[in-house]
Image (cartoon, rainbow, N blue to C red):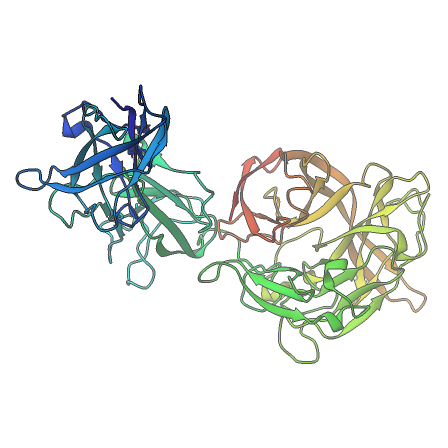
Length: 560
């Protein structure tokens, strides 16, 4: 008699995850499933180990019965090829035999040409060839707890960082009217590229009727959902677009804006070496425009080799950010006027060199040790805006002049932290050293007012450990009179007032490019953005903790 009869692929259920040949078990509720593609030729094999006490070879003969038809007729029968005695014999079910929703039983006998064995116990399986179907409603019942689909006229009262529900329905169709395996699992993501085998919620862990989501940015968000039935069939990926209004109580997103849309923008090198301006709250995800072609970089080469920063202008009055640019080892620092010759905001085609001022020992800057006369030792740059204020009302346009924070190498091989105040259009005043050492392997990030104190601060990422620290500045106003008797006042950062650790593990290996251009998500607090080695743009949603006197900050993410 044959032994170890079985079908291949092995019939299975997804939840609970198990494989089951159901041999000798007549309880149809316990039979497992074969999925889509099983009806094709050479898709399903029936196998058994056959032996002969007298012959060197034997074969398997089998018959397949359809339990879902009246009288349970035999729908296919056949013999395997001869195999060595004690080997596994295989017979392939012909194409078109297995039908959606039907249940089948089969048994096998061994034949060595002289004698035929008795049959094995009957083995069983069911067939589900139809994938689950997902759908989303045209309207929602409660916009205060649910996110309506984009463009349907409903507006949710939920905001960025607040959890709400996306309603859905899912079913496993039964075209035959006989059997379907049933929906077993669900997965969802804001990134359509699901990781293989990752994220499935099955059985009691699977949501029913609604998925709870927390959007990472304002504007149009897209949720991607996929279902799987017990036979392993997966639905097409369903897409649900929904709009999240910006937080009306959040800070107006003006600082960080380069294209005039009144939202902060990310400026970084694009995949082709050009300079891109990314608006994160656009429909369908990040939308980018070309801010400058490769030929418009200072050396006419790829923008990937340059450090850029923007937060305010180096001129009096513009309502969008200028762009400050430096290449490692270059003795020049550049500013790109915004708008440039085209008159289009966010297009950078006019640049000017920025002179490096002399370092002078003053009450605000008691030490110039290690200061370099050119920008060639500059490692990092971060425009922070007016160090004393984030007020950008019409009466305060002069406050848009931005100060610049840099890290610069010193004779010890480490790097110092310096602040350069803007004292006139495209002109820096004498710098102030904020820290003498400890800044060589840190990326400077300009988040704006992370502490809720009404003035900007600074973030720094340790490239090796991924620790992200947040700092506030001690600031003052300096007045000086030139040789013509003209007195000017300008704002100066004179030191680090507060430091807090706000995140860990955000390493340069995982996110080579990292930045913050203020409130990218619309919740009133700065966000962090990063770009992976694969080119994926991700954000972390920020939230303030603590008090203005003892500030704290938390980042949630990354959100793709």
